[in-house]
Amino acid sequence: MPEFDSVIRSTRTVVPEGIRSASVGVRDGRIEAVRPYSARMSAHEVVDLGDTALLPGAIDLGTGVHAPGEDLPASYQRVSTSALRGGVTCVVVSPAPGRPAITCADSLQVHQRAAAGTEVSVLFLGGVTQGTSPLDLADLHAGGVVAFQGSLSDGGAPDMAALGDGRLRKAMAEIAALNSLLLMHAEDARELGTPPVSAEQRPPRAERRGLERVIAAARVVGARTHVAPFTAAECAALLAAAGAVGVGLTAHTCPHYLCLPSEFPGPGSPAHACRPPLRSDANRKALWSSLLEPDSPILTVGSGHLPAIGLYTLEWSLPALWTAARRRGRSLSDLARWTARAPAELLGLGGRGRVQEGYDADLVAFEDQTTLAVPDSDPSPYAGMRLTGRVRGTWVAGRPTLSDAHQP
Image (tube, rainbow, N blue to C red; front, side):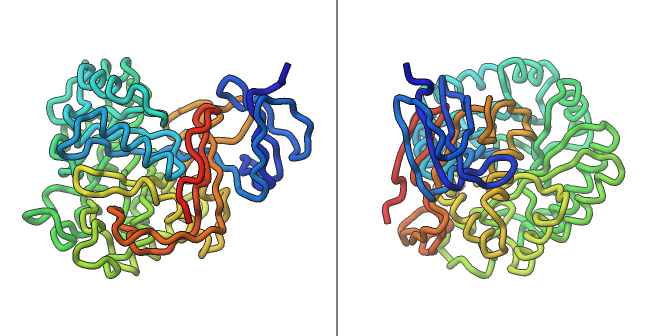
């Protein structure tokens, strides 16, 4: 009788301790053993990746799903395909934009039904609006949301109107009582121009003012808060100072803010849809410096995929992030920490985000030396670029979901 359902071998397996040769034994969707590469292990199937790296699958935080003019189940299927092609094995869905927005137990159930049958794992964030009641939050929590999300502006989502300071503090207190986490889009609506779509109408000071409001509220309430997305590097000192005054404040950014300066995209690029907008090249470099600082409060990096405003980023985010990270001498361990381990720990997703015994067998085969050209016709902000990193295959709960995702 075979010992394992499958064994996946790689000479470059990213485990919590670093990168080493290993054979990963999988049974019933879980990693049951991590042994030396040459270990004799009986299995129904053995996959030998050779020098292709084996990483924990990415957990994409705040993924937008609903595309304009598309029914909800079709949107989930499309996101599932894009996620797996991009090395993402779990999407944590933003409550909006969407029809319906995930702001109560009934709308959560609509999304859960729509997501049923997708190959990628799907988790949900609950939306916090001016009209959200404590009962709504409790029902969403009981229904399975892994955290909550609110905004001080439009946040790119018209269903998530700006929270005032009073409602923000109350929501923080209610979420803290549930021992949960609040993700906040921190651009202050009062600092945005009209219409708030261009970089000029969404200046860095909007993010600074919003961050000051979030810190003030969290300091009073003591709630765990994750600013998402964080883009204005001039606010890094303010973010870091929050910890010094006892505020549990961390942040999330996206590969396009780390890879694409505002000077780069042409006039028709989808990158102009980003909210907050792309910042200057100087800001991009400073954002990297903040991310790479020891004990940086910028913990997580995710795609920022938001098809409702024309931002399709899931498929290329991992290669884009790796392209920029390797230029700075970073390792695949850093990549795995930002995209898998840190999101799992932030959300309390026990058993996810690591290649380790007892954890879910959510895995990615990643060719980190392969260079690919993103087609000029691609709907992502990376169209026309050459990126390093190719997702060769993924496994969700030990089940292979695709291979050779991007053909040379």
